[in-house]
Amino acid sequence: MEILQRRSTTAQVWGAAEEFIRLFHRETPGAGDPRTRLAAVRAELAESGTYRHTPQELVHGARVAWRNSNRCIGRLYWNSLRVRDRRGLTDSDAIAAECFEHLREATNGGRVRPTITVFAPDTPQSPGPLIWSEQLVRYAGYGDHHSVTVGDARNAPLTEALLRLGWSGGAGTPFDLLPLVVQGVDDKPRWFETPADAVLEVPIRHPDGDGGGDGWADWGLRWHAVPAISNMCLEIGGIHYPAAPFNGWYMGTEIGARNLADADRYNLLPAVGRRLGLDTSSDRSLWKDRALVELNRAVLHSFDRAEVTIADHHTESRRFLTHLEREERRGRDVGADWSWIVPPISGSATPVFHRTYEDRQVSPAYVHHPGAQDRAQGRDLV
Image 1 (spheres, rainbow, N blue to C red):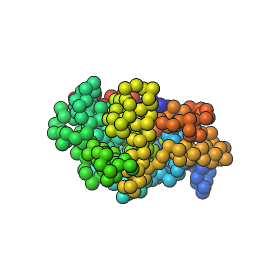
Image 2 (cartoon, helix red, strand yellow; image 1 turned 45 degrees about the horizontal axis):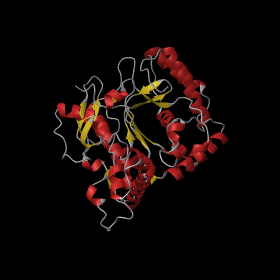
Image 3 (tube, rainbow, N blue to C red; image 1 turned 90 degrees about the vertical axis):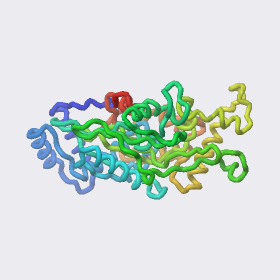
Image 4 (tube, helix red, strand yellow; image 1 turned 180 degrees about the vertical axis):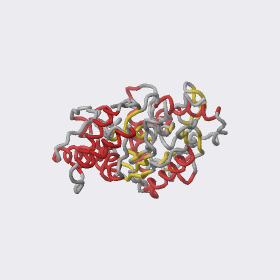
């Protein structure tokens, strides 16, 4: 299930459809006997090779796909996912506009709301639209992937491709917003400038440095409020929605221990270590560990000060165990990928570390397209 095969036979679609329809009726009070709905789905498949989910089925399917996301620690609130049904949209202009509106609504003034926007599905006659950008909000990386001088190294290939396509570039800061790349049905990939009002950004300051002259403010560090994944496919009952951007809210370590700290991203640990006066000459001084903690303190402090929703890894770990308990009481097994569930710092200090999980793949699900990483990096843009 991890890699999507976009072409399915009618028999495969029917098998997946039957499984999902029965799940929907089993978990939806008042849905009634599934046999009438299954007969209608079978008739649609016989006529067109596909079928259309009802609005209620789409909502439940998107929520259950979050419930089934093995790499996500924040699934406790899966049933609160807001579903924006935009299945009638197929052209890139309209899709880009709705993606930016998704960001505005999900941001919600800082009280981030888990949200998904679902665009047109694949059909036997035509593949659905695609969003090439890995997330709706990405920062530019100037230079090539092996020698990025400014910005996010992960996005250097996409930045380079966009520049070749005619994007004039940003101001040259480490946090220039990249355009969104969308491919409509029967269309080529196109880029759309990200409106400033669609993106809430949080300046990063250290709690011990506010007004203290330690220079954190001078660094100009910031991060965006909404982590909206946009290059994965939503699969529900054999129907593939290749453009379905979705978001929860950040866990602090995603920013402080990965995006800003990874050597192939912003690589800030050496600078933080020096700023803190740590001995960076030897790993045995554990300067990296101390710098990681302080960088993560800065992220949580800054989001809290800006009144923007964010979770810390200790709280989110406890919430995940609550999710496991709730699902077990309902007779549902929970799959999980240990390497993603355990936080990237202080893993053994969290309760999720001391358990094993089955990395089982079930549907509905969010899955990767073949070549999704190549598209996210802009390798096929030009």
